[in-house]
Length: 208
Length: 208
View 1 (cartoon, helix red, strand yellow):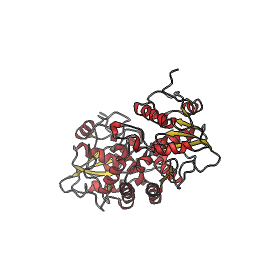
View 2 (view 1 turned 135 degrees about the vertical axis):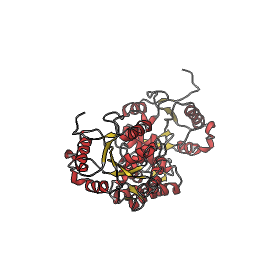
View 3 (view 1 turned 30 degrees about the horizontal axis):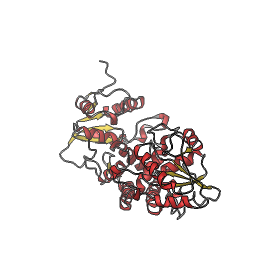
View 4 (view 1 turned 90 degrees about the vertical axis):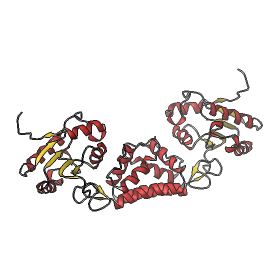
């Protein structure tokens, strides 16, 4: 199935690179490469340049761990946002999805991963101590847990609940309006927005 | 649906660029960009470099119009191939698809487009004179037409047939084993290979 016989080495290398993108096979990679061949040189230079520049210059916010062009991200640095609420998410994409709903005006804390013994990720690999410190600040009133409903997500939420119980802060979780097992990022804006609005107190130790 | 609020400008630019690829929406582009963020810097530099290098250095073969690293492509330059047969195709991808079948050992002639008055493409925009010249060479015995069965493809085949009729060369067309309206590049190797093997004489003026 190799597309390499008698083809150009320059083309082959570009196809190899495109095929390294997630979900991209060699036919699609070839399509991307030939598309690039039809673009003006300056467009291709801009394409290459922006990706390399992003990788070189993009940083993580020193407060919330979100990607940022500056030391403190534009969300943490925005004074008009509600600093009394911190929403805990697994990934950068989750932040973008929630921002997209326009329903949330608080801050975030990006874990970057969730506790997963299978993948060798334990609590000490996540910025949990940083979260406890942020939650301990006087102005912080509420922590919203917005992790997935997978076993790993539930384990992480439970672990965070225990750690945060020592702090004088309200702990809530986003409403389970989102289908079990669905990823946050693929939820429609309405559902995700509602699930933020209808968040509920979180205490897995309390029997209803 | 914009993913740009409170996000990073560096990220946004990279997402814009990925989203310019054919068939790639902004969610997929974001996924590509975040994937790049997780790669080592040298991998991202290699990714950017190969695409730009391909665009800058890749040329078209001076004989058959196929993309090539050198003035004459590796197919035209391969002495072990059968120089008496020339297969006429619309695009570079068609060459790669036919090469992939391993059933063809002749040469190619890449038109780059087909006659399409709707898109303002006339016969004079295609390298048809070059094809007639190649077909007129003593050693060339057969021209295989492997254009699509769309009205534009049929028109082009008919036009080529008329032009080539003046030349002492056999004209054939690939067997119509491939479903009407299907693109060559998505045909399976078996079907495409068979359709090259079972090519038939081509003369639209002759009534059977």
